[in-house]
Amino acid sequence: MINIKDITITDPVYKEKTTFNFIERFFIKMLNDKRDMAFLKLCGLILITTFPFAVYLFIPGNLNWWLVLIYYAFNFGVLTGSFILMLHLTSHRPLFKKEYSYLNNFIPWVIGPFFGETPESYFAHHLGMHHAEENMPTDLSSTMKYQRDSFAGFMHYYYEFIVRGIYDLAAYLKRKNRMKIRKSFLIGEISFWIVAIALMFFNWKASVFVFVVPVFVVRFLMLAGNWGQHAFLVKEKPRNSYTNSINCINVRYNHTCFNDGYHIVHHLKPAMHWLELPEEFLRNTNKYISEDSIIFYGIDFFMVWFYLMTKNYNALANKMVIVNPNITTKEQAIALLKERTRRIDDYVAPARPVNLQPTV
Image 1 (tube, rainbow, N blue to C red):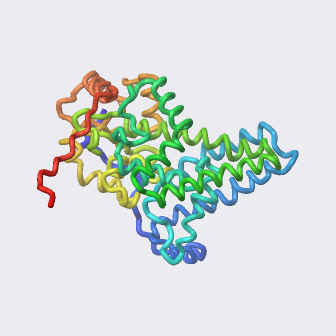
Image 2: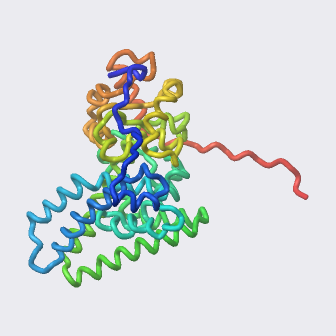
Image 3: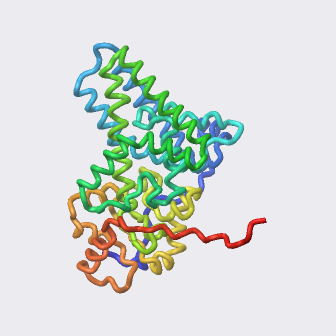
């Protein structure tokens, strides 16, 4: 355990760059923010690795088990986390300027399907629903009703998302009258499955391994990440971002996934640039202390999820940043973490104020 006042941040922050190569100079004028050049480099890496590899697997006679394993090891082990967080950040802050806005479709529509992301589904779920509902019961990915150190609970959470996710999200967006987002979501989802099924007539194994399997794997990973991000709640203030989210700081994950560990900061300021998140966190440490936030160092959300699934509270306590001066022992830290993972199934939303003004 380490005290929040003793924290020195090692996560990425912006370092001014004054010289660019000719490729960077070509693209930089198209970007809304030159600090996002890292996203273009990631797209370039995907274009020269994942794309040709996937095409090769579709050539009749080329697909075999060891090639599929290499493809998955590279995509899921090296690129998927970075890609999903690039998709996340460019959903909040469009990568390209207005005059090049058509290029913003390249990440969700062209690259996304190779990483289990059906076009427009991430935007619809994350911005159209999740940020609006903030893990409350109306959030389709809410963790409130689950015992958050239960693997059985998590598998039910995953099962419901896989079986009902598309229908529930479409129904939610209709109910909230977010019809433009709903239309894009349904077009993207249906288009993906039409193409995936059509490709099965050419090479069914390649279509299954390249497009279908990643959908189920990536949705598992995203739900595990969301579970870790929203695992430690305070029943009395479930919508408070300081207590219904966590931060994971000083971890390698933040270097490969664009400071995604600063999830409290992100929910407080969704449009803030990812390179500004560590400094924003440091500027507000007193608020994290007063709100009794949960912060870990040296582990990421997936490790948090894994430790919860194995009920390894000792490991979680060892990596906990102490913000509450009353927490002085590991046993106290573990008791706090256990208390914050209890299911909340009796939450009653505050009643809306009644308008007592007479109608004319």
